[in-house]
Picture 1 (cartoon, helix red, strand yellow):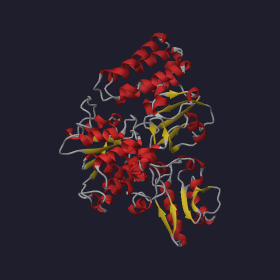
Picture 2: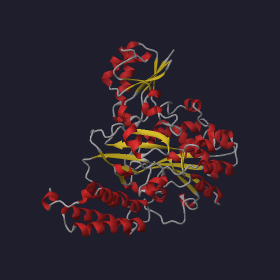
Picture 3: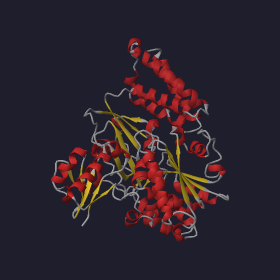
Picture 4: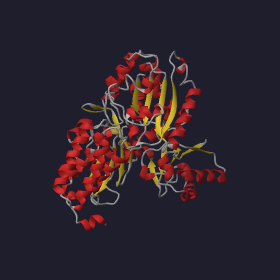
Length: 518
């Protein structure tokens, strides 16, 4: 019987040497004349253990990691193919605490299947949701998504069903589904992991959205910095089209839907939906004024659904298992699961999918294992470079949209960056303003000018130039940006700045001019 060995093709694993490991395994198989198949799967999301090598045994998959190419011969000698003991052996993959305690709905297949095998995908309930959607009326599909409580996982948290209903009800000869895969926030990699590790779930989710709203064309807009995701998605679309899951007759039905992959140049502001649409149309990526909403006048002025990768990838399980099944996970108005991405100065960085409701402290201390340096955690930034910095005093905050908003924070794309007690929060506040100044599209004055003045003001505070007066000025700039900016880039930059000022005032004490010069 052919033994299967799994080696990730995920970009994070590749960055840590997975390709060399795969080649070393192939060489050992050939040299030893073994009946073994190497499957290049997605990542399980335990990034501190990558490259993670798994072998299929009678008891289940056994994991080894992190594996280097130099370890491969010794692993074979120790009985890798039988899942035998070795100092890199982690036991049964599914029993590893980091995985065992998760609730994987959106990422149910990621790391398990061959990403480009439709047979694998179907064997794990792939396209079951699409089959059910084809048999339903459009309004019933929209209702099921609405009833599930699914909200935009890209950061805004807008109810997905309401957006779909607006497009469904809108008049127009052509409608579009646009997948926002321009994943630009720091500490975020969930979109990339899905595109590289389970691309068919995104294709399925987009197709269901098309059937629900009357759209016949979809676009996946991602960043050029994601070459592996672009290549995998492009190949997956071709495979799905050849197999009849895309095209003029989806699964032999009356519905037509097709997908095209587009890559942008990596401008952060193109993660904002109207900037993305301008870029997709071949224009400069600048923010559009709203109204009109993209749902009514979006891509090429036509009704358009713009959803994040994780939002769309969550739809198949909702259609397959039902709205109530999905809604039973979570708390308050935050229903279902959220793929939390843990990064920064942390011991166990990776992707952790779980129902809304864990506290921030549980995520950082229990799941993340505290800092990699072993020093105390000073701050955690949730929601990318525009997210607030939370001190340990706020670690009892439940991980859901409303709880974070109540503490002047935001979940965003659910990326978490951990900082130890060596972090300088004035520098972090300055960085937020500098980031905004660099990435601003320049259309609105509060963002374009406010961020530049913010950098200058932070430098004056550091240099001891009228520090109290400049702290007031910095807060005033934040207020102007928050309420006067056209989009979330300028509107959310005040979150990291004000949270740093409010929670870490000691870091805003002036230093002598000579130190500032150094």
